Length: 472
View 1 (cartoon, rainbow, N blue to C red):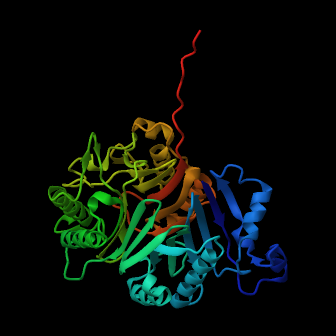
View 2 (cartoon, rainbow, N blue to C red; view 1 turned 90 degrees about the horizontal axis):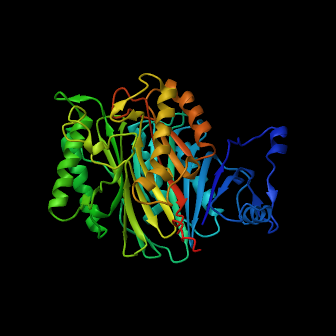
């Protein structure tokens, strides 16, 4: 198993002579041009892959143009015969929205072209500055991807760096990978006895004009799309919910609370009709989830599901000993508690993928560090570290599993107040190190929360050592 994280800085089209000397691309042994911006920042879980010979071999295989058009960071995860690439792309904050969108698409294409095998983008979240641009971006992405449009969700959460848009995308390729696009907004990926289902872009029509009706319509659409893909809520691992006016009162009740009521009603129905199994043994199996604010008063929903018959694959919902499970929150937070797990770990053979739900500065069930963005960011990261750590996996009956912050492949950081962006970013860069991160301005589900963070980690599963008694 191989994991590396690559990062790059910005490059203009007309660099100065000094910067040209610093940024001069190199030639590989094969004669292809290598982009200096693709040098890995770190390598993990790759055995002897840290050797200089391996690094040189890996870089010589790249076929990159000498310049990328956007700032980008990406993580490469090689799992046996399959390669995943997680990308965060933010164009330069110059030019109009269309120019920046084309820059982002061109950068994604360049990154994927330098991989060792052909890659297909399967899902993407596009963070945009305003709703008026979303329809134009939809046409542009449709024109580029054609009948292989990824499961795409456009979210009105302005990138904190001043860009018109930012793109988070997942791409995949490798031997035996089969990818289908049964209808817009659904992508099915099969390999090695696994079948992943990406669903994106669920947005209720304007006729659904209350938070409850919007949420009910969105969840109904999710069930329908899962059925098209031959799946159900039982298979869902991760859900994303971007809700307009998330803390705005509606008939005296916050809109997020009405979303929670609709979600609970939907889950109850799906369970009653045999399409969802919430309780499995002693554990509550709710999907990992993010409920985050967005501009306007609409709702966007996307999800990830997994189907398999492999005996070495299992799901493990994780709770955090520092926090009350969200589904056990007192009624004063929401009449129907938020039904999600703090994280969902997917154990596949000898590695674990841990999908971390939206996490904030909450201890037990109370917000801490009121008004202090720096301390809230620190506490949020502390909560993630405790959630994904080996001690927590052992607490959940899986010794030998667990991850560290360095095992995160990508992170989304939601910042409520624009003035807190630089403070929040400084903490994240110090705590996470080199890592693909997108920073988006968004309201959080409590009015006193200033930051929310989510991510996904890849880590090795180490067999529990067997202690043989010493015989005299």
